[in-house]
Amino acid sequence: MKYFFVIMSGLLLCFYSDYGWSATSTSLVWESSYTKTSPTVDGKMDKIWEQARPLTVVVREAMGGDNPTEVVLRALHTDDTLYVLAQWPDDTKNDMRDPYIWNEAKKDYDRPSKPDDQFSLEFPMTGEFDIRMLTIVHEYTADVWHWKAGRGNPVGWVDDKRHIISRKPIKNGVEYSMGGHGNVYIARLMDEGTSSYSLKPKPSSFEGNVVDSFEQRQPAGSLADVQGRGLYEGKHWTLEMSRKFNTGHDDDALIDPTKENFCAIAVLNDELYWDHSVSPIITLRFTGNSK
Ligand SMILES: [Ca+2]
Ligand SMILES: [Ca+2]
Ligand SMILES: [Ca+2]
Image 1 (cartoon, rainbow, N blue to C red):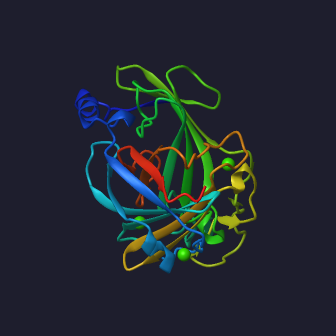
Image 2: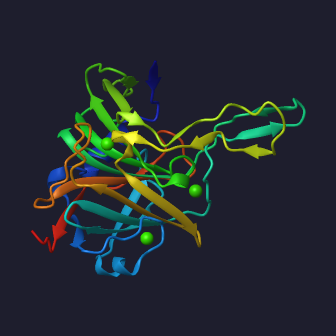
Image 3: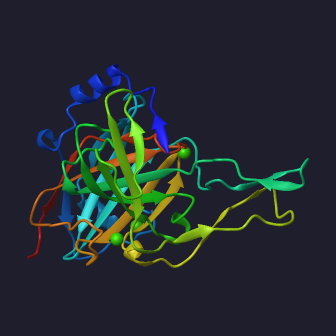
């Protein structure tokens, strides 16, 4: 399948290159504080989070750079695990993805596209990291922790994925035409294992006007590495996520607490696919390590 991005005008490419999103020019430093007491990953800000220094990061629409939104990040770590807390404003709580909607005239359910709120944290694995997936300049693979309010969230799991961005065709890659500037191939892969949700068959008779089309389950394998729970309160999402520095799975980035680690975040507020807001590259730095 080939997609054409009319919006990928020369103007937009100029905007990108002027914005200077490169790993060498990052000025955003996100400090993780060492803790012996782990926070509980439940979307509620534990007392222990007061030890973590907040960092405010502005995310903007990946296409066009509009709608600046402030996300407050905090990080804590134990000897082997990273905990992150993210808080961002959102006027609309969307915690159901593509539900079945009863159609009274048809006496049947429809399943129109309806987004759920999402957040992602990405770490580079190989190549030249860039938060923009639609890039003809950089090729890279990133580890992506992709939280979805309507899918893994009810059971406290985050989709653990990889994004592979290449200028050459790749397995499971979708080809994108960059409006005369060449092509880019993007694969968005789930880690090995079992995801925390699956598609539920359409109900054969009336079960309510809106019925969730996903059911949750216990994940397994490399898809059971990132825990996360978001809570919506006062027109904000508060999300806690955790993952071991080293999962032991080769489809995950290794986080080294003795070094600076590059990362970036993205927010999807009632948006689908390419509509999302991204941050500049952030430097995650670990302080107070006990060993
Ligand atoms: Ca908590
Ligand atoms: Ca929303
Ligand atoms: Ca994994």
